View 1 (tube, one colour):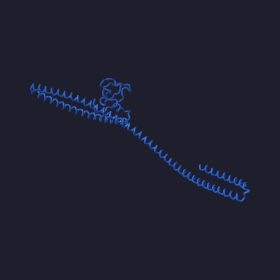
View 2: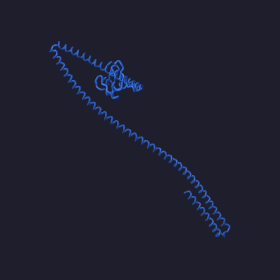
View 3: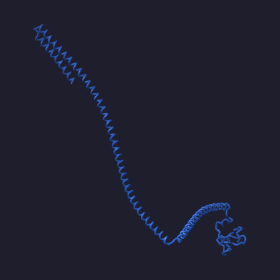
View 4: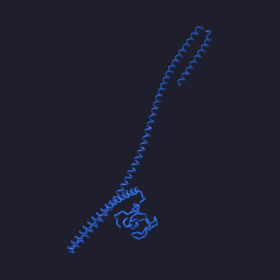
Length: 293
């Protein structure tokens, strides 16, 4: 069957219930099949290894727009696959290059091994034995040195752990001391504030006491002034009383000289008047003394 000419799709045998034999498997074409334009033979899609999507493209009742859209989608899918294949090809190329490099290195290693083997073949056996013994001695020395280094490393680690433990202890002590200092500073600040408040209160009390003292001084000065005034008044009243007493004596003498007959009557009258004056004077003195008290 030539592949250059386009095949014309005809209805399957199932449409008109006429089954045509397949040109390859010779079975009736009961499923999707195509017809060749050259030989007019029907072929199964499976026999031609075609997909159902390719078969649907040749159906006459499909819309061309849908086919075109499908072609575009297929083209996009193909482009995506090509990109994926390109990336896969790049990865494969990189892997191939890596394999080539490994093969080259293995070849170089094999060449070096061959050269060493060739050199070893020409060397005498005693030299090889001495070399092996020397290498064994060096290996033992290296093992011993490795053990010593391991021991020294363990000692350094233990010393470092001890140092770190001491460091942690010092850090904890420092943190605790900082906390104590902060608490002490807080308490000191609180005490300072309390002291300042007490100083303010004492200042206020001192101001009040000073004001009270000044008021007391003013009152005492006023009292002293009043007392002085009362003393002056008392002295004046005493002088007046003395004058009255002297005048009383003179009047009595004059009355005795003028009328001796009426002496008894006048004496009684004057005594009563002067007694009233004396009682009034005494009452005034008592009132002044009470006011002074």
